[in-house]
Amino acid sequence: MIVAQTSFAQVSSQRQATTGTRNAGADTAEAARRVVVSTNEFRRQENLPLTGHAPQLASAARYFADFMARTGKYGHAADGTEPAARAKRFGYEYCIVSENIAQIYRSDGIATGELANRLFKGWQDSPGHRKNMVDPDVTETAVAIARSAKTDYYYAVQLFGRPTSQSIEFKVTNRAGVAVSYGLDGQTYHLPARTTSTHRICKPATVEFRGKTLQPVNGQQLVIVNDQNGVQLQAR
Image: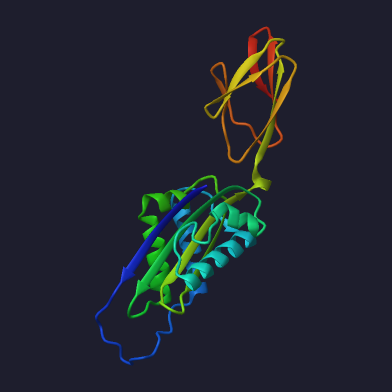
């Protein structure tokens, strides 16, 4: 789970034309939609797949933005839970969950387009937020923005995820007649003769065996054999 937060504030000394009247404020739903569009355009420019909509992520983002706006508490654990736990609470069975948050204030009000742009650019220009935005392994996203009725601060939540339904499951079977070891993304696994190991991973990974590498796909079986060419790894 990856989290990143930021805060933006701007105070203007410009006098309001009408005193004592609360600024109508931005259209938060439209601003959220624009952030999603801009983020996917950014991913397209980076040659990354676009993210799709996930209703469960949207519910989690909406809940947390509303919570921060209502309470004034700010931070990834402001409600006492973590982003992944909130996503799961709203029915999102995840392999990956990451979250960007922001709070924005401008004393003379902020228009819908400016709100969306400040959120997107602020996250894009921050290394931690940017990393979440261009994660090649996430496939779904949601953005929610809420305005505090007390302070006029805007609280924004951007969630990214990859559901367990998009995990990769594969098997490694040892038919070499001797115990062997192989690597999976830097971790070593030992496999006795005539046994099979099943792996379920959240993102594409590389299996390494005696200098040969393979990137398994979902449902694939990798077999270690001992033939005329020696002990080697084969994909079935």
